[in-house]
Length: 175
Image (cartoon, rainbow, N blue to C red):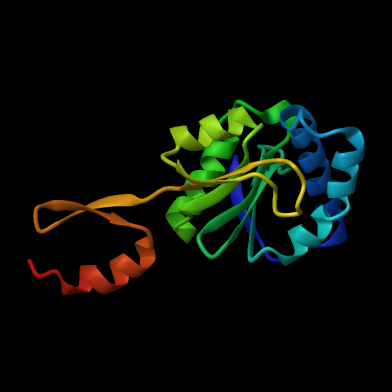
């Protein structure tokens, strides 16, 4: 499997990613009706075009099997096709986001308990809950953060902005 950042967000790729999104959502967002899912589906292509960083996972044949979107250290979206779930693709994508974009925050539907468990496994913790989703629908969101613990002067300090910490603190170290 390869993880690739997408720069050319052409219509063909957007359609493939939309199919992955729908496959994933049908399997994991059981709280959505068909009508609700179809309403949300209308906005997915625009979100795919506008998210700051769009990263896909390709299988050995070069076909996309999952994707994520990142903006400002926040995971905006992560979807793996239903037939490829449970193969470590989501983990690989999220690790890539953490390592390359310092992803340390996300929001997940409270009813999507599998995703919540996955993010907890990956080191994220709930810090806030809302009754409504970002569109005002009655689907509670859990906001989760992942802070890095770094030893500083003999104490563990939580670091939210890893890149900022490295740029400001590491050059000051003298061996």
